[in-house]
View 1 (cartoon, rainbow, N blue to C red):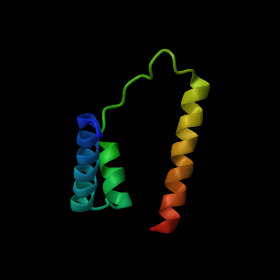
View 2: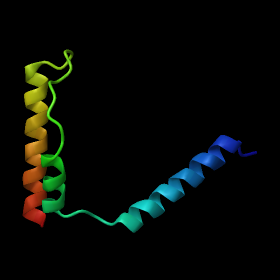
View 3: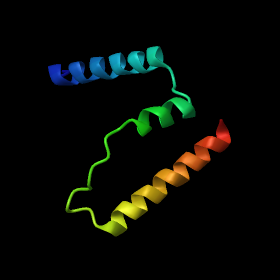
Length: 70
């Protein structure tokens, strides 16, 4: 017997997949333009400078690897 919430979850997953297919994929320049418009805020107090630096490095590394693929 399938529980209704499992059916709802499967339907939501399918609809999300369809939405992603409709939206397509943004180019690197579109992503950069959108990110440049975001509001810059101070990190939460739980985030130490070390964690923030590690996260920024991860983003930079990921961005570099994506740029080489475009």
